[in-house]
Length: 242
Ligand code: ADP
Ligand code: MG
Image: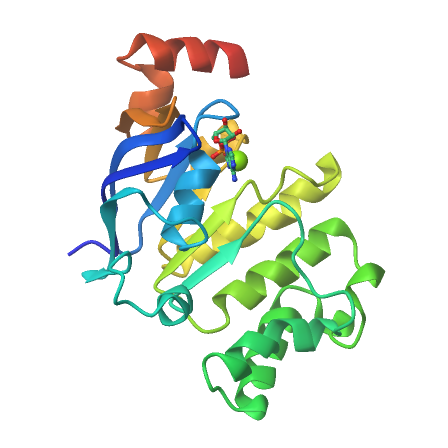
């Protein structure tokens, strides 16, 4: 069974069809990378999976549970998915340690001691132990983004969604964030991510999914997509980004 099963998902904003029937599965421990031009629907797809946007048609199953079913509790579905976006979503008025542990305590009912212990272990192992008591504005963008990732994985989500998590960073800070994603992959996380970092996509992805105009045009291994793309749209997109 797939961790994620997107079936025939459609989404329209006014009369603009942004997702035109998307089918996509992600298996356990798999890293799937969405590529495609700006406006192709990558973020909207990730947002429908996290139930930020409601689908107009189709279904999204998380480990077999239809989370788009109107009877499904959206908050409980969301709590099973870790999410990090392009812009840092840390609360400026909370210290790093409280940013990381807040949802674990309030949504997942983890004890403060457990949440703090887990968070400190992760922070220390990433060289951020001395930042725990700082407020986010004392951290670099790369450090903030790593804190956001730690927060997203603290409760072992079934699925991790990463949307252009390095796009807002200065180039010299991108590497430390990508290192953390490599490590999550090694640790067995199941990840669906959108990125413009093609060399990273090639390295980390088990599967590349190319989107254009709200549709999946082509998908395959990094070697298939980058070395021998089959669809003219894929060829054209890759020639523009390389
Ligand atoms: P990508 O992440 O691939 O750049 P998006 O999913 O952000 O693409 O956007 C796909 C299309 O949907 C774009 O044309 C965008 O303008 C439109 N769009 C996204 N969100 C909204 C919204 N909330 N309201 C109206 N249009 C939107
Ligand atoms: Mg986007």
